[in-house]
Length: 317
Image (cartoon, rainbow, N blue to C red; front, top):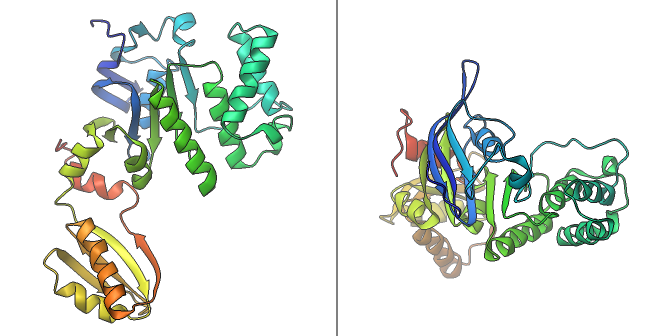
C-alpha cells in the first residue's frame, strides 16, 4: 500500500467474526467532506467504522487513515474522533467531567482541557446541562454529549455511527449544521444513517453497503442520476383523494395511483419526483384541494438497496 496522506484508504479490507462475515474485500478511498455510509442493519457499516477507528483489526487487507496505520495509536488517536451508537459512561460522571477527563488523557494541561471541554460542549448546545450527571440525560442529550466528546480534541477525522438517533428536529438540524461546518473546515466526516433525505441533505459522497460489501459509491449527484428511473412515492392526505387520483392518472410520468383503505388519502408513484410534486401543487391551486399532509414513502434507504443491488447483490454504480 502506498501511503496517501489525504485519504482514508481500504485495500482489500475484510473482517470475519469466526465464520460470520463482517465486511469483505473493501477497496475504498474516502476524501475530506461528509461521507455517508448507508445500509440496513447487518450490512457492515459499524464494522467498517470500527476498522476505520482501530477498534478492531482486519482479518485480511490493510487500512490507512491519512497515511497512518491504525496500529500506531499515539499518532492515530490524536487525529480521529469516534461517536459510537452505544451509550456507556462511567458511573456518576457529568458531561463536563467526562470530556475534561478524556482531554487530560490526550495530554492537555488542566487549562487546555477545561477550555476545549467548554468549546465542545458549546458546539452541541449542552452548556446548561454540563454539570449534570450523564445518567440523568435524555437519549438526545447523551447523543449530543457523545458528539462533544468526539470533537473535543480537534480531530481531523470524525466518525459518527447513527449520530442523529434520538434527537428532536431542532437538535438534528443543529447537528447537521455542525457536521457541514466541520466539513467546510477540511475535516473528514464519516456518518452512518438510515434516513435517505438526511443523507441527501448533507452528503458529499455516499457509500452503500449490503451484506458486508460496498455495492455502490459516488457523490450524491451520481447516486441521484443512477436512481433517475426508480419510481419515487408520496402519500397525500387530502379532502378529495379521488379527484387527485383522477388527475394523476392522466400524467405519463405517474406509474402508480392507489386510494388508501380509509378513503382519506392517495399513494402516488412517479419516475420524476419534481413532476410529482408539481402535479400536487397544480391540483391544489386549480381545485382548491385541502391538503392535510404529504409524506414520502421512500424516506428510508431500503428502497434504494432493492433498486441498486437487486436480488443478487450486484452493484450498479
